[in-house]
Each structure stands twice: as C-alpha cells, then as structure tokens.
Length: 255
Ligand SMILES: [Zn+2]
Image 1: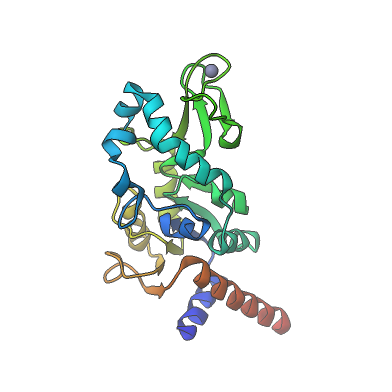
Image 2: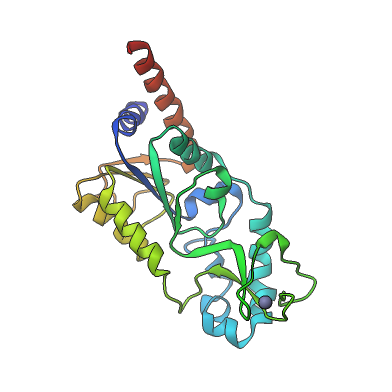
C-alpha cells in the first residue's frame, strides 16, 4: 500500500492537469449521510415522495418538514474533513485544477477549492421560487415551514430534485474537464450513477490515468481504473499529501 501511495504521489506531482470526481464517501467523515446504498437517506425516505420536483411543487411544506429541514441541520453544522482539505491543498500547490462533485453540501468550497462543478447543484444556497432571491442555507430560518422569502415566495434549495435536469453548464464543463485532464482522482463514489459515472470513461478515452480512492472495488475498478487505493477518503488523502510534500521537498533539494 505504501509503495502504491508513493507511486500515485509521484504521478500527481508530475501531472499537468488533475481533476477530482467526488461522491458521498468524501463527506461521510463530515457527518453527511449518503443518499444511496446501505444506511442511506433513501432507505428512510422514498425519494419519489420527498425528493422529486413533483412532490415539492405539490406540497413544499411536507418536503421541507420531513427531508429538507433534516438535511439543512446536517449541512449547516458540517465541516470539511481531511479529504476536502487535502483536495484544497492540492489546488493550492498547483496540482489540482477542478473538482467535479455529486455532493450538494458545499464542503469543497468551504475547504478552499475554487473551481467546483456541482453536478447535482447544491444545498448550501437556496432560491426564492417567486423572485429568484438567493440566500445561503444558514440564513434560512425554520420557524415557519416552508421557509419564505420577504416577497412571500417559498425557498427551495439549489440542488437538483428527481425529475429535474442536470444543469447544462455543469454537464458541459464536467465533460470538458474530464477530457482535458492527465489524471482523474475518483473519490468516495461507486461511480454507477449517471452522468457522473461517465466522466472517468471520458477521461480514460482521452488518455488520462484513473486513480480510485474508495473503500471497496467499484464497477470502474476492473476495466477503467489504473490503480485503486483502498480506504477512507480522508485517511488516504492524508497519506498522499504527506508523500507529495516529501516529493516536493526532494525536488527543491535537487534544484
Ligand atoms: Zn422572493
């Protein structure tokens, strides 16, 4: 494992353009529950009843009371973990360019990444459905449900509900980032939900190396990934950052 960490760190230091694709596994260590899979939010709430745009338009108070208020409480107090901080550090030292994320918690931006493509929108911002006024989630008060804007319109999160289109700009930019990168880090995602699942394939076809950081093998592991670092995103990221710093120190000494 350490040999593989060293190898991947070496690739990252010498790459020109690195993109990360992140999913729920990256935010679990920040206390954000995954939506899909075992123990996920959709095991407790039927997404068609609580997370579809039809359900929200029909009864926004119900969706706010049951699902959105709980999500808001979790997102409002969540802090970036080692995985987010590591990616922010990779950007700061000029290795990482873009993060494509399926997460809606805004933690990559909070950690310091400046180019984050949010495929499913985000929960960190809300928008009035009547006048389009935007406000951050912390400013939304839950003393009236559904929360309302000063104009009387209802606030909705800027995330994509089931039944809504993925924002076109996010799609377009993700494809572009995937086809231009030298390395794609696939972190904390089983990569079986479209359209995110397609990004490593685009990257691979364009000649990039695919490095997976996941707790278990995924559909990508056998045919698409060049390497998989098995473990929790935060722990692996800490090992990688230490190794990258060693590489950079060594380069400075040689220079
Ligand atoms: Zn309004």
